Image 1 (cartoon, rainbow, N blue to C red):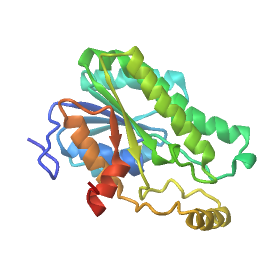
Image 2 (tube, helix red, strand yellow; image 1 turned 135 degrees about the vertical axis):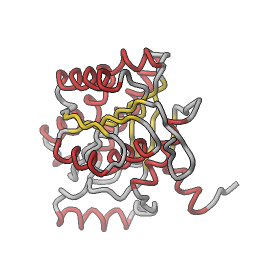
Image 3 (spheres, rainbow, N blue to C red; image 1 turned 180 degrees about the vertical axis):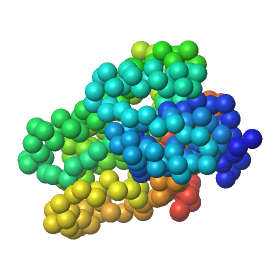
Length: 256
């Protein structure tokens, strides 16, 4: 029996991780496979997905998908259901952000953020819903601590994640057969900021520091993945999983 480093087994679980080509999604896919799940991974960059599959010692099945395209989401859901024989767990970790002040955020940037972070989550979930309902499954949507405290320069990103959280609540009211979980993720060491303009980023970091926005220590993607494996294995998974709060408690201990 395959287990993760803490003895958690996902043997027999059928998992789809969307946004698994890098960062947190990649770490979740590898951790789930290591714990014994049968894992399908989806993203736009098929070459990166194949690298993830090659890295996994267990079988991981890559499938290309642009979450902004409805037919692509439908095809992926059908292919995954056929390949895995059903679907127990969907993790939507896809996310993009763009560094820009709201007054300078153009319509193309708004469309990219909303189509990827919000609409894509709705499309993928809709496509996978029949299989998830049949299995009495669960879906996790990775949100951000920036919803409650938007960083200057990342307001559009925070708005897209706020919309995602409302989407999660709406799914809960409409579909009782599936567990829909909002996962709040704090600062994490990924490459999401690699495409930022370096001069603007330097200015923003100075601003964030001056207003106390850099007070949260970042975690590794593998730390997030470990907790997501526990969520996958839980008999009664929570509908809200605050990993920012968990990381603060682990580092500094409970205040009460």
